[in-house]
Length: 215
Image (tube, rainbow, N blue to C red; front, side):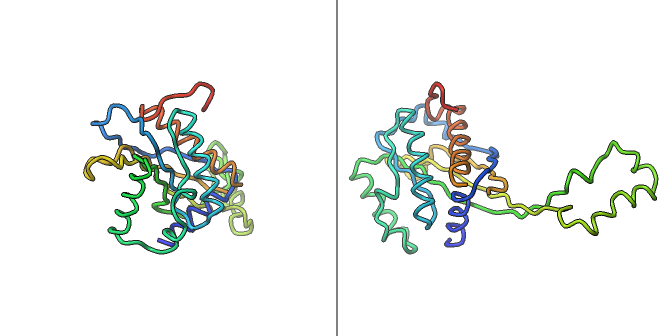
């Protein structure tokens, strides 16, 4: 769990990312989602990254008429400093309900893949080199001598889930979306990219209302 939390922190503190939508699920029994008070939680032990992410996503919800607050300002730091039992988490949920929260949006990294890319500068299908062995070998022998022929990068699989705290456990999941963040490398661009793509998907699926001028 600590390793995954660290990875999310890395994503949130990296620049220039590309967020791709993968899949989502929406509770069909819920026709409208308008919580009175929603808590935004980013699952990372990096406090700076967590605050920036939770602030961005909270602001996006507020812009769409939802009273959203950051988890870092509501949950006691001592609660996230160690693993908690299900009973302790249930007790935390009861405290949130007592404070007026009726929904939670939680984001976590669920997997990481290492990828390798081939430099497009060396790979050309429309080239006559394909038709003769000699020229072909001569052209692509650079793979042995050029360090940047291959480039390694990572793809992070991230989930954002929204729960209705007042619903029965079996029906509490409102929506869950999975996204890939490809080779994240500055905090503002990485967070903005992920938040914008997530909220856009929520708008498309009718989970939150659209706001004019916000992409």
